[in-house]
Figure (cartoon, rainbow, N blue to C red):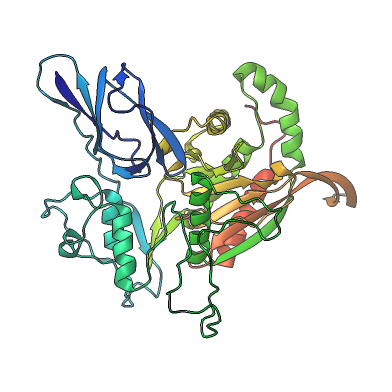
Length: 449
């Protein structure tokens, strides 16, 4: 008999770790080739890990809810044959493409307490994931300090939560909640009376879940909803949000789609919606105003080379996920339509790959699909802007003609852009959303597709 070490597989360039959700196979169970051994979660995407060999599961090295790094041994499988122990070769990480970095005028020359210091990790014998390295660099934690932190991962490996807890305790702020946790209220000391009026915090019975009215229902958030909640709160505390609005006359766009949708579906076997048209207009506007396509690191502005547009999609569960169309500016309208339809269908069926929700540089959300005319969306960090498109409504509008102004029935819609006021001022945000509207308003009724 030989033993096979099953490694947590690489799931994309930007995915460094995953949480074990559930073990499908238990120690002693027989395993066939490609049998699902366990289910894992990365950010908002759940995945299954199949077995590349047949045999018997001997040992599980991570329990449910524990976080494993890419390349960690997560299980031992006993296989037939007398050969030596088999180990999968860990996938080496590709170097990350260097981003163009621009400093904010008037700020880069000033000393800052948040300035990050590059750390040389090559001198350490300990493995650190890219995420841990990034956090350590942002918090100016030296390698010696990092090596001294006790890790809770396999073989004492330091994971993200270990480091965040250390940073929180070091700063005296208490644990930082960045993962799905169960929170219970602290029990007051035994010598504290209920009538203690010096404390403003109410005394809470941590074991009580009974509604006072008797008719309320307590629903525990699922894992994805907790992640969304944490992400939204973090975004609002990170970025000062500003929202600008523009009303656009999209009559030509609506008439054009009505004209071509049947022939397009017959030819491409795909339905063409308004979403790929919106994505195309956003990609064009980003090329006109590239400083919308950035992220922030301390006092540095990271100008993104690629235009990767995320499109917010509602799931049957009521949760939200944002698959990403990579290099959207390089796709024509047919390519954008196929990409939008494919990602939307696989999002609804929980078939997205972990890497397909990573790497977005700008997000588009269609609040009009719910009948809303406008919205004030929350920025999808670490991006600096998000565009909401509202419902298209027929309205009377004033048109300027060579014979004078007339009132006509037009297809109108609102665009609302929320942006990070740290780096995007009202002029840039306003001009950008106006440019998107211009591209939609100037749609060619005779455009070939």
